[in-house]
Image 1 (cartoon, rainbow, N blue to C red):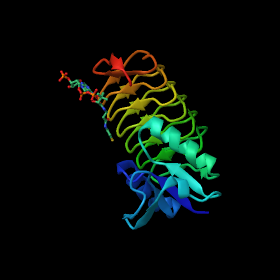
Image 2: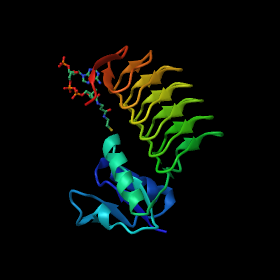
Image 3: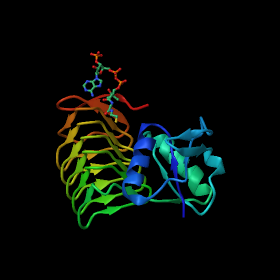
Image 4: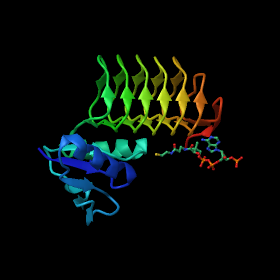
Length: 202
Ligand SMILES: CC(C)(COP(=O)(O)OP(=O)(O)OC[C@H]1O[C@@H](n2cnc3c(N)ncnc32)[C@H](O)[C@@H]1OP(=O)(O)O)[C@@H](O)C(=O)NCCC(=O)NCCS
């Protein structure tokens, strides 16, 4: 079984590092914009040429792009796989859906439900009993308190802190360094200390 990694940007190359740290090898990168060449010794090809029956992960930060490429690759008959760096912690009673990527030094605590195609960057932490929906992105160094609910496609910026028991609605983007102390509605950009809604997330 071969692994295909969609995305040759920063997150894609960091995912390659994560795979090589413990999981195995990458057969090819998949890239719609520059589908030729070689990146870090790995050949690049167009997603539409990825062969059925193999494994894939979409390593692109933007949740909407990730969702679209998942549709393309599922439609071609590939199977999404979850990759966890050997130096990340996934505590007992926590489940991850398919297609997730968890980088080194992430700490994902116990009794957490994580959906599909979720990205947890290096040095991020997620507290006990959280519910994390599909396509969430947690950027480096963000800290999510216990029993937090993150809706589909939420992004938590670098170094942000989310207080325990808060709910953040689907499609919302929390800016770098924010401190979220109350619920945030769906579809907005919020940042600051304490975090305030600034505008819709277009
Ligand atoms: C929140 C965010 C999406 C806003 O982006 P944007 O709409 O393009 O915002 P701009 O850069 O145009 O800044 C608009 C204003 O908001 C302020 N601002 C932007 N992001 C801010 C943040 N995270 N905290 C506080 N203020 C912020 C800017 O200082 C600027 O203020 P001004 O109008 O007084 O000059 C972005 O700044 C952010 O934090 N992204 C996350 C980045 C990150 O974590 N990267 C890690 C990648 S691995």
